[in-house]
Image (cartoon, rainbow, N blue to C red; front, top):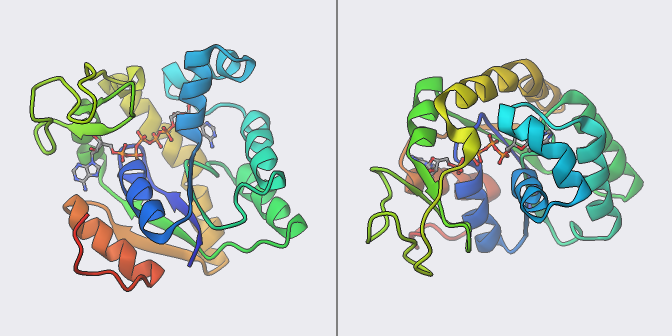
Length: 222
Ligand code: AP5
């Protein structure tokens, strides 16, 4: 399995697992959240349009995201396998993606849903810190850096995401239920939805994912 979508509520571990799995199976990890945050930081036209939605925990309009992904598909960026993390997030996005795959003779192998409860999401996101330089994420108290507030890899001061404030997280959860959850059924009906318990240790979730994608690697802990 090399063509994958990761689904799941905010904080379910999509980014954490997608980075590791993409490296392990040698495919591209494409996170729309990361692309949008970079666009906001760089002040591009996309970033200017996306910023207000992201700060409120709402979805950026479909046409912006669909155009973004379409350009990646057309450029051949996904040709050697991919994990899409954060896209699609609405039924129109899922339908557009199907159209892009059809046009480019591509096939989705699985949509993997990480299941995590609301309370776990709030707990995780209120403890999330990240390195603005290398994007590595930490979690207090589960996954702390060696020196408090400093990235282990490059010594940068860790930061919090503005949309990780509890009120915004609760709104993101509502948005997920209303706008994104319907695509779980969309992929279930296509018989490509695979549910994984995301409320285990990161290593256990990763081992379950390896079983799903059929990797031979089971002993090496990431
Ligand atoms: P995006 O960045 O995609 O946010 P999200 O889906 O809300 O996901 P998160 O990054 O918050 O969580 P995650 O599931 O990746 O979890 P993580 O691994 O980081 O999108 C941000 C915004 O951009 C959206 O709100 C929207 O405005 C916009 N956007 C993006 N895509 C869009 C689209 N397609 N359409 C429209 N708008 C779009 O883990 C979270 C924390 O938990 C970390 O601290 C981590 O260390 C910890 N953790 C992870 N796994 C575990 C574990 N097993 N046990 C304990 N802690 C864990």
